[in-house]
Length: 527
Image (tube, rainbow, N blue to C red; front, side, top):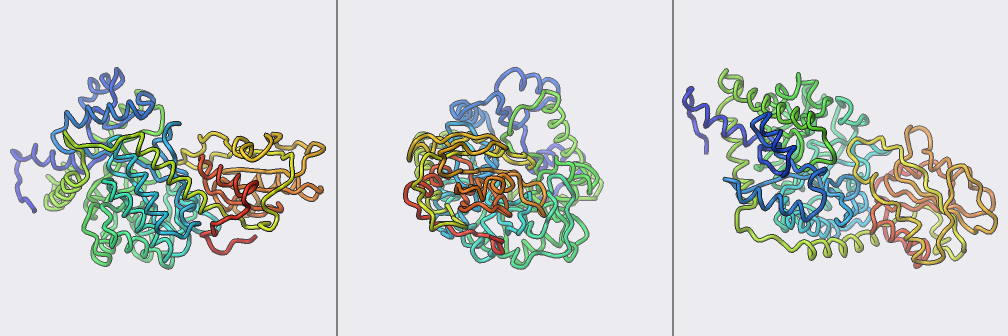
């Protein structure tokens, strides 16, 4: 329903509608003195769950319960909980799911639906009912730094099936899904979190996963910040042509969301966060994101205050744009009505029954184990498995931590523990060390050590140093398949995730059953 009202007396109502379009909101979600100080300084809550204060699931449930009781509308909080590499809820008690590429290695829409369902159960149990997932971008070779293991793979048909399955599972659990980053990051080499990315054309098949997402009933779609010259000279989130593809060609009727406008590489091409927000809403974006509602770690008080001030500037800019005729009132009303429908469908209201956390997390643990066992892939040397030699030596090559959005780098090192479940505890080596006498095989493992697409990563180099000395070398990648590029190891194994389920499944493949079930979901691998 479009409301056509105007005039100075109507400005408060217009402002209320605009407030719906800017995320995070203004709720006081984090108890304590920093939030109280922030409210005194800015007159607003931060709209965020700050993980330096809310440090576990119990505190999070308590905070969302309080927010629901004090909210005039159903509470709808967003979070980045994709599984694998990107998980805002990365506390030790939260079972982490393997990510998109692991699901791609299973080639199973059933596994993707299971992942969405159990992940949704975890989120709904703690009061978070909008997940900024799944990634529907196609994977590339070599891997694009912004995508990597977040993608389901490189084949449009398979990615479409898995994305649709994940969305069905997530939304059946009562959590809104978000297909991202429309119209697809395939072909984007530079990380859009660091650089304003421009490509000449869409990758072949790039729209197909988004079409499948729409057909699966996805609630929201995130529009990327990259520019596709064959469509428009403007970034996608500020392009009427790009959003027209989504609305008119794919038939999407839900909520469109912008990429995070607080990132300089996203907002600078459009003149700053406020100008970018106006351009995005004018182009057809319904919600402008300045971040999700769950922080990824500690923020100084000054940074919190700056974030609230930035949000207030965005709201004022949108209000001024309507008053000055640069943005139509009808566009704002259309967007606000869509947001209210999303809140009504997925939001928490007082009295809403939540799943039990312990049961939801146990279901996620069982689901993670199933997915991990189905996803481990051996790219070389399967005939050598299971390893029957002992003792083993293990060597972890440290991560480079180049990726901006990556919570998995904080995962504990479980490889020695997982291997010990099947035999004597392995001897732990350091980079550059020689293999001790009596060691019958060396396991080199890594997560993110590649810094140059034209050269092997540090882990592959270390595997090369140890190879050819008469001791079999196994190289395990706990992250992207590119970790294994150029590695001469006798056995190449991809676990796709450093989290518990994937690490233990990799160990079982190496030392117990030797039957890898996964298939690499990215083509053109140079093994």
